[in-house]
Length: 299
Image 1 (tube, rainbow, N blue to C red):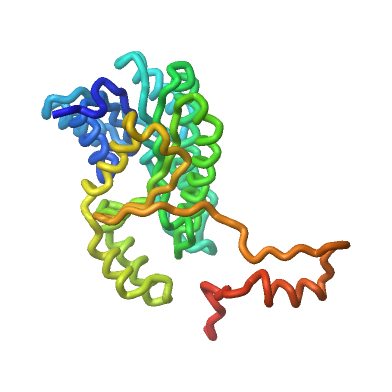
Image 2: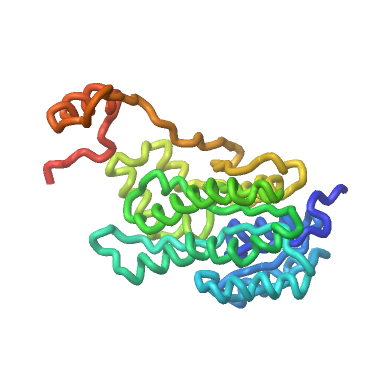
């Protein structure tokens, strides 16, 4: 069997369980040396031992990558152990569910810190190594929550930030042979199968955010193993021209998010728009086909 990642070194954050664990195991099967990074030491060590027990090579690194110095130490420890870093999977993330009117600053900072700042910390700590070797793969987890969801505004903001970060990194690092892509997965994990998550899905369905079909899908998500093959593929030499793309993956369904485009442009030949003109032109032209996603209710 051809090991498509033979002798590559991969750092996978949040890989003590769920999707991250499956990604780490899949990369090890393909010949990669895997660094299992997780904030919970026992989980990181267990997965590293699991990889070793299957004949692979792995190192556990417990730590909070929302702290810049920890991310830097993660990369240093990887190089000290394996000599290089080829692949970074920014999989770590937390939801911290809360309505905006109940959200605390601590809650907001915690979610942004792990899901977005943690990705920056890791990229910043590894990018010069990848530039010097003129090869690298950076793959980050985003979410359909970035399109807007209930009770997860911090998570939505963080995951939307990942999309912007991915587009920017692709352009900055692409010339050095480093590709930067993102994936928005749906899979059955501790994050999506908890009672709290199920209650949030129910509220989204009852409020009209989810259709009945979508609600049923969220209650019966695909297994985490379904995500790993895409991440492995994006890490290979064959994917060297795939850069700055945001993938949606749910079970056996895969899609690509389009880049936002301007629509319904209107140009005024002379002078600035007046308030009276905007009242007319915005409704009739710019917002043509628009529907309010959350209109005011009577309560």
